[in-house]
Image (cartoon, rainbow, N blue to C red; front, side, top):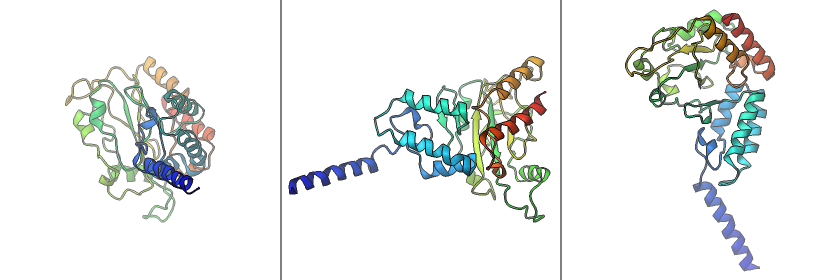
Length: 279
């Protein structure tokens, strides 16, 4: 009996050590690896990103699915299938990168390296920056109006390139590398990147308070200005309108004050806005 107890203790210690030293899964690019575990930071970010009520069920599903796969267990294609199916039903904070990999959005402390994406030729980058406007405006002690939110974003340099028609490679490099480089930004603010190849650059500088910055459609020559095609042709507008209005995967609505809306309601509001600006 004593020997059995020793073996039980040894096995317990082994698995405890393996869990502590072993592959505590990397951050958001890890779904193609053997295992994935959501950290508390991931969960907190998802809650801010999606709205607490919506995020609770989403993160629970992620935890159940990904933590249910022990290290070196579970097939990558099964994990990918889950992520893709889930994003078709309700958008997750995920995107497909330039190499075709699906990644979960990173936590709110770090940005992705812009140079990594600029090396790979043509791409479109939408940088979404959302500040938490659920608190009263200090200047008025009242709720923020859309105009006040936009003015605040501009005056505090949260819109880095504004509506530059021809951003340069240096503009990309000048984006901050960390949320802490931004002055007076509330901890609950959310930042995310959505990469998608489009022939048309969506004008969304008046999306309140989500800001879509037009950065680049082609980066073939580093250091030179971006060369556009004819993004405002009927064909281009029709294509991007169809892409957006028929897509669930790339629609994110990030207003904290709408956290109680059902996902379907959020998508309707986003699409209503896009329709009014794309038709």
